[in-house]
Image 1 (cartoon, rainbow, N blue to C red):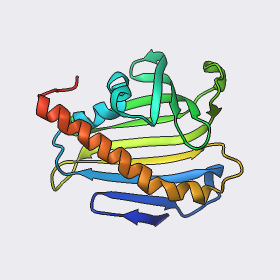
Image 2 (cartoon, helix red, strand yellow):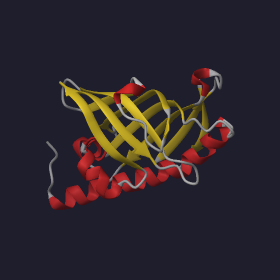
Image 3 (cartoon, rainbow, N blue to C red):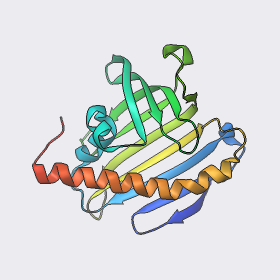
Length: 191
């Protein structure tokens, strides 16, 4: 296996790629199982409905679609990284749906920096971010994200950044689950 386990609890796993020389940054695989969430579309909405996401996600924000063509977006967003400066990303973002509507995958990677004006945030490099959302065989929904990025924090070793991943990922999972349960309770069905 090319992945080393960083941590695992009842519903999340965080792995780090064994080859630390790849991508010059952080290369992780994150997995979450939400047994109480029945609908893949609810989880997908948490990631892809940017207006709704702005209401509950306090870390990733400022999403702007700069260009859209057939589920292919040039997307701009900011990630708060306290105590450091915010990081921003300009990415090509693509959505793929499962043939039998059993899940979906969205993929993104950094696009040309010139597509969005510079701000006070540090422009980070996203080599790869792929998230697959599917029904879990034992019930509920599972998502797996594989991400390779350089957050451009030159004085901080990448292994230190990876150490913060498990707690930050658990916060994200808790927030996604909370939002999904709110959607389920209200009868909301994403488009």
